[in-house]
Length: 320
Image 1 (tube, rainbow, N blue to C red):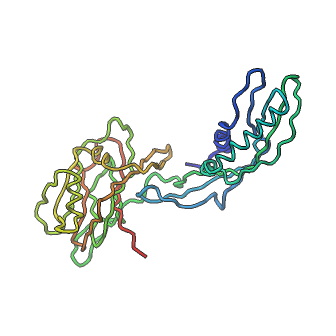
Image 2 (image 1 turned 90 degrees about the vertical axis):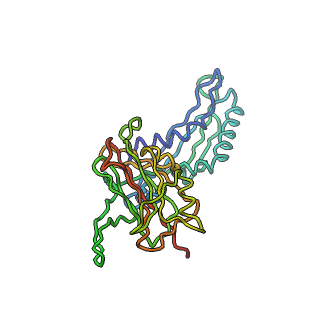
Image 3 (image 1 turned 180 degrees about the horizontal axis):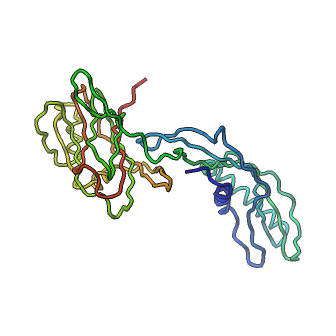
């Protein structure tokens, strides 16, 4: 997404504070929270704060806007002591939630001032203010206007003249093309990851998906029947299967075997939401040599519906 406008950042900040406003007491004015002072500032150079992982599919630049502000709570009571107690209760409630507030973007939060209660024009009402000084950070993801991730590069191995895609273990399937995705050894694969967008989730692409563990020169692979049986056999420590496949009736069935990462990525001029998920292997899959392959194939040359799926074979991180 582009840098958010100041009004959206302030609205998000105030939305977090609003639940701390006490309920209105019958016969008294309504309590509230407002901004006594606010200054929007950059978090860092270019608002850049890091490149966190996006599930298992990769990472993305994260930026943030910060707000230095004073939030003013107005509290009411029938007597000065009642307004004083409301201020004390508010302070207790806020500081009891300091961990949750930090997780929601409040880097700094302190009671700046709380002047004594004052008698309002209404003879039955007393008011007290409580001002909180705060530094609030609003994070947002920035793909730099990109509409897609980096696409595969075609390459040729000079000694054998065999051609394959050098993808960095990453491939893209869409309604333009859905080539077979092959990861070769030597490698240790621990999971598959996906980043998926469907223009109409209720009408996803049709077509079977097949996952195959095989090797160059192998005969036709055997059908494992189920995903669990397939993964168990290709990752077994003893008598590991090297030539086996499992098929899914549809792309949706294939992706339903993945667990959601709880994250998403927006790309494009009118940002499309890509959901991130992964399929963890019960044990590492060892592709011992360049002849060993893990392949993902789609039944048709391309999707028959508007959709994009990025696939990644996640390698085991080197042990230090």
